[in-house]
Image 1 (spheres, rainbow over the protein chains, first blue to last red):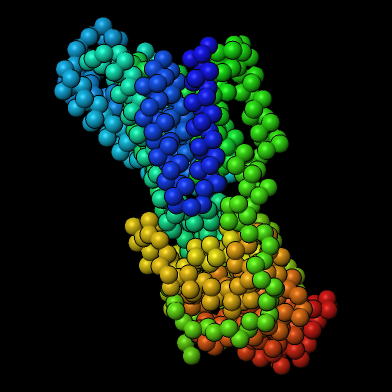
Image 2: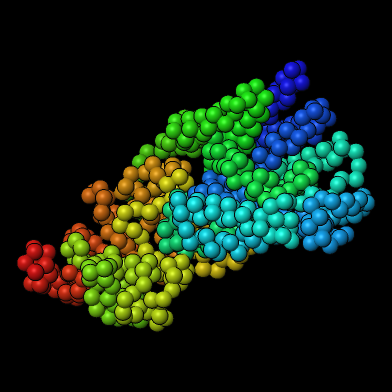
Length: 382
Length: 247
């Protein structure tokens, strides 16, 4: 009991830090918040050893929400199939890791009967190569599949991508080379279980933090404005000559890169992968990433982070204390969110106090409409 | 004066509705050309066809001597042939300055350019053009919160930011406060003279178009009815009949 209170307060502190991150304007404040979150993340598995798995999933949820928001929030393309890249990365990594020391078809056909003990060097080389291949492979898949689904807009894109993830799960289930529906037992970690848990924690924690920092930078470039423009009016963006297809492909590729990487790590952490529940869990992780972004406030940098922390904690708490009602609780959150707070928590706060976020609602000076015809039109063409 | 846009025998139907039938017209470089006609006469359809929103059924369109009737909207826009919309199309959740920044020309944008930031002169140019259309004091407002008339002005400024060769304006004065219309006519003329942008303007306000254009085409029922100077169009019996419903 004391331990779970400790676990809960960890979440509350993280949540408060994220809120202050969203409001912070001065550079010094922002840096302090980043350092505090970093410290909290590094200390997590040390002070909350029993909860390392839950904490790992927490950081993974933050990564899920952040990557979903690139397309769903910032670009207005609601993908329901982003989980596809997670599963694809998981399988790519598994194949690479096994192929480093053994024949893949033989290994998977044995359904775990073949126990190969990987040496430390073999294991970590395989894991490293697997993660790289997973991230890059997911990007290649995003580019290829993007060319097929980017012609779809609105609800058609949502359904099209959902179909993609569902189909991937079914197809992998019939593909004997990767173990079919029976799945693959991942190579066994060569070391102590506690150390194993910490290694995977730090891999996912690092991936999550990197995603955040990368997106923070990415949204400050031309890319950020261009995908916002596509969200607000894709017809206008096209009419203005913006390379919309290029931006959409990059946006999906960035999401795919981080999801593929995380899929690779998560597969190893779980130890056994199979298509429907672990690799392509469309109705759990696949929907959670959407729900978390919407809850926190889509189209903002911190919104998905806040949404993910809150959602994950409510999920963990209902699982522990309201067993049997956990899906009802999660469903209620989603319904309340969609019906009453469509902008999400951060979006709602932003609508309420726009000046705190540098959004102006009143003109700074008087209306000068029509009077400034005499303004210079010197040609400092861009 | 060379021809910028050369429309040759363009037809376009939607199902059984013939929106444009065998239309040919020329937009000369550096000038202001008008396009008038009663509601439903096919003016906007012709604009959409020129900028590539939908394919032509027959005929062809040339821009600076290059056939463009098979190109996509984005490619045509990057050639320097831009249009504004009758119903405003702006980026509603972004502020005016952001709307301007994202409108920089994409003609030479290389792949890696999308990860760059905007240089200071682009910000200066954005402010300058917002000042030009009279929206400088509203530059930090969300574009979606502007009035319809202000959004039209913003859209005009965004088009100028894109540095086009030809600008197709679909009813630039519709929804604009009558007292501001004179200022807008002045701005359109200055964009034409000082920036050298060729204008092709759809307009219902006769006072505006007669004041602005050097040459006017009139459409009715999807067909080209008349062409000429403002004076000759004003006195053309066929045009008068079309507007008064005698056609």
